[in-house]
Length: 411
Image (cartoon, rainbow, N blue to C red; front, side, top):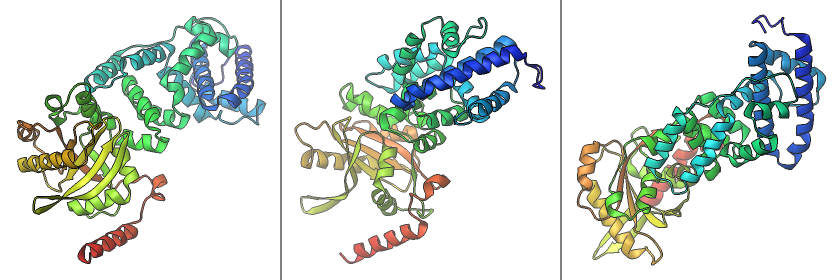
């Protein structure tokens, strides 16, 4: 088709419309029984079918617009086939051809026990891989055409699609990833995270915008886990660590002190455990320990279900200093002695600072027997509009802080 959109051969285009209409009608029955996965497979087939015929007949950019109009006229009761959504279907099929889906399944099998190195290697492989369609013949129905494109029975293609993480990710999340123009391997990683952690599409959008992949996988992270934890726990601990952590603290002072930050983390703990990662449970804040004749208070104590270990978090509103590692090491020893049970693994320390010199931080960890990770944290106030209603207002936060400070002054 020329760019003017007026030269589509009528016979071919009518047959094309009829085939699309048949696929839409047949999809309705399947969608009732397995809504999300079947809808995604239907969208994927539609995208492959449209792309293929654009290539086969030389149809240009106006094809999708005319297709959307034809569907609207012939099937006015069917929703989800706007020009915009049909464009996303094409992007969806182009982003994830069958060989890419097969590679996702193969990668799943290799990453049963995750580590930063293995994940980074597999993501690089997927990023660099070239997966394409092959042009073929004439207009058939959608299922037969997709079968011809990939030279497989449609039931076998469906089995591959359903076994891939693509089928377990909702359409809104796929649209966000398509709009983000992520490399294939990075898309795969976000898909896996989204499924494993049950992220909504809004949460996925925030994680992509804050570059979670780099913060968890590709950035250099400072810790002594390899020297202090047995494998594979050391790999898992390093994988779960992020650098930097990003906390949305609406209403927090520009120069927040540790107590202010702790208070916000605790008041809205669900959102901040999400940033900590999968399987973290809140245990205590300012946990009191009497050691000898002195009183000590650990900032935050979490429990990591995947690691089967307590996590002691120390917050510092200043850049890293070597003495901070010594203080955290002390609290790890105390928690190991006072809280750790016989079925718990070694307690892990996480020091969150407002910046660090990585060389100094790595030197500071040398010689410690306890596992310690050191990360930056950032306070972000860029809250998406559609999440603002779920977050406290500045006035509410100030009221909470005032109440908290009054309690501190009048125990």
